[in-house]
Structures are given as C-alpha cells and as structure tokens.
Length: 265
Image (spheres, rainbow, N blue to C red):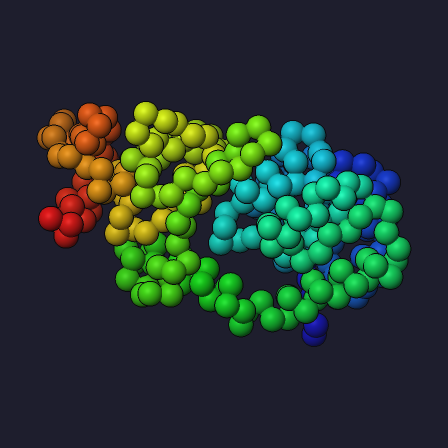
C-alpha cells in the first residue's frame, strides 16, 4: 500500500485554504491531516503532528510563516511550500530551504509542479544527506557527543539575530550562556543580550555537547566561559562565568559539568 504524504495547510484566509484543499484532495498520494488559520496555531499543530509537507502562507496574524519555521524543532522540519500573494519574500523563502514558492494566484498546473517536487523529496528523504546529518546530530546529543565528525559538521556555528528588517549573525563562540525565554532564547554575549526565535531545547540539540552544556532547565553555558564552580545547597552548585555571572547548576547536571570541565583542563 502506498504511503501517503501527511500534509498540513496553513493560511489565514479560508478561501485560500479551501482552494489548496481542493487541489490536494485530487491527489491520491496526499493525506490532509490539518488546517491552520494563524501562525501560533500552525506552530502547535506542526510540532504535534510532525507532517511530511506543509503549505505555508507567509503574512499571517500572530506569527508569520518564517517565524513559524524558525521556532520548529530543527530535527523535525517538514518539506515546505510557501504560498503567498507577495513576491518580495521569494529569496528569503529559499533561504529557509523551501521546496517551492507559489505566488497567488497560481494555476493548477503550477501547483501540481510544486507538489511533484514535494513527492520527489518525500521519496528520497530517508536517504538524503540532510536526514543523515539530522539523525547523527540527535544521536550525538543523546550520547554526549560521540556520534563522530559528521554530526560535528552539522552543528550550529552562528545564531541568526533579527533587528528590525536586518538579520545578522552571532558566532556561537561569542556566546557566554543561553537562557530560556518561552518560545525564544536569550543569548548572553559579553555586555549584549540578543533574543532569538527557537526554544532552548532546539538550540541544545544543535550545539556541540562538548562545548555547551545544559546546567539547569533554563540555562546552557559555554564551557570556555566558566571560571569556577562553587558548592551550594543539597548537592547543587553555582557556576561562575568569567564575567562574574553566577548560575545555579542542578544536582542532576553537576557531575556531567564537572567531567566536561576536567576534559578541558
């Protein structure tokens, strides 16, 4: 039996969703598993259902399409087809590794071309280099960084930081520690603090576990910035960074932190 491509439609306009649904319904390889009318709902639905394909509008209430993608778990990014009435986002869409960019209004034939690309990627996905790197990266995270050079190559090297209409990049080596802030993460770099899209767990999976370690539920530290450890209460301790910042280390993470610091000594 043919495995169907599990698909979610995201658009804040009901007629647009209905039009896409009609086109998808004519294809026996597609299974529509959800529809969303805003970015916040899309983020929850995609994270929970983990579809193979998402047809994603860009201009939406709450979160736009790019923000939704930025906040998804990097290990579970579906194939993306951006569907929008605005042509100025095309370049950025492909920077987000979109399969295609459908500019409204589009013809049925143009839609079928985009869908054909999605089918091709779905068939090749298990053997693609991208998925191999993602699996290695996750294995590296689970085993404490022993997955090898391929996983290391896939690790995050720079954080994209958005200020107004500009995106610039902060090298991971310049970050002292990361702090959870809801769906976002604060980067502490010297005297500067940057707020970036994506939760702390998603960044933890992308960072080199030999260089960055989670010391508590809401904090990850750059081991090269650690000055010393201070004993605290009930088996916990404080880590002091070179800039004087002190952060609590949970009892469960203390031993791993000590081992990693010993390896750097």
